[in-house]
Image (cartoon, rainbow, N blue to C red):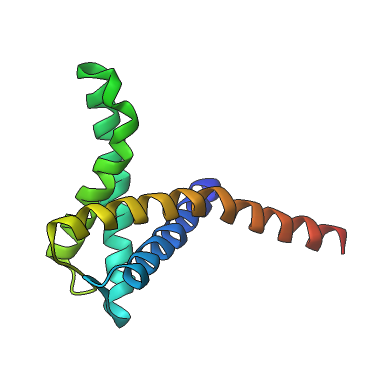
Length: 128
């Protein structure tokens, strides 16, 4: 249970980083204040629900699309988050595609790097 909670917190942090990077890189992406925290939570929950569903669908219907499920889940998460929350605003078709790719890449890197940082910190605490 603790491992699941830590994984969820790491995913929240990685998604927050992804949304913040998209906000900084793209002019038509806007994240705002306290509503941003709600937007990150909504995005993470939608992604966590959509990604396994899309992967299962890809496995049963078109295995070649299995790798694209994370990108599609990210796009769905962005769409729902922007509709439901005031914390995220994206405008322009190309911006939606760019934001999807940026959030996906940064979140992926975050989920790979953040656990290493936490593990390194815990190991240092145990040794010290």
